[in-house]
Image (cartoon, rainbow, N blue to C red; front, side):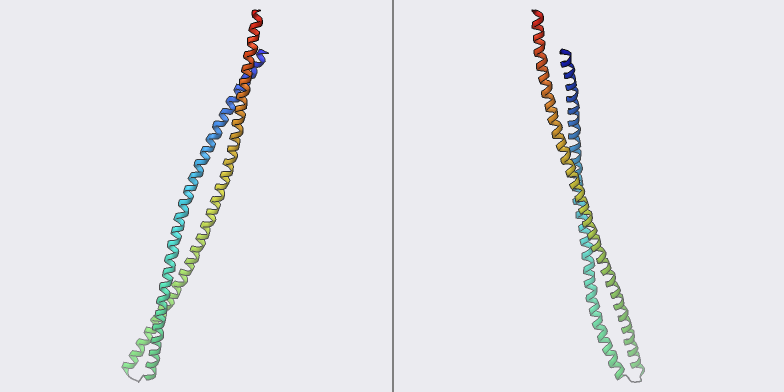
Length: 201
């Protein structure tokens, strides 16, 4: 019976050491997971802030340029309309004189230049509208990336919670094993005392 108790105590000691080692491993794993989570959260906030600021600046700049170009376009259209009216008047009042022909030629050249400017402005506005659409798509992509990162972080939190539950269970098993070890030691001491007493008799 003494040998059985000794063997049982050795088994309990080995189990206690194993459980203590498992507790340390789980605690270390939880700590690393928490560090990784904190780092990921910080990087996510920084990346989100930088991307949002960049998109806001680019989007704002494009919109402002579109507004300015539209104002210039309206102004040049009015100027073109005025010039065409003047050209029409010049043609009506034109006489077969060199001076009048030169004025008409100047008006026609001016109309051509203004038409070219308007065409250029229209093209630029179209380009800016395309850029604005691209910025919107970038912003949508950023939101999707943020959602994906948040989902990953949520999964990490769930995994961390499971590890904590396992740690609590392991600590409980460790405490139970230590209690069993103490009970065996007390029983062993009691039996040893009885054995010594019987040997003295």
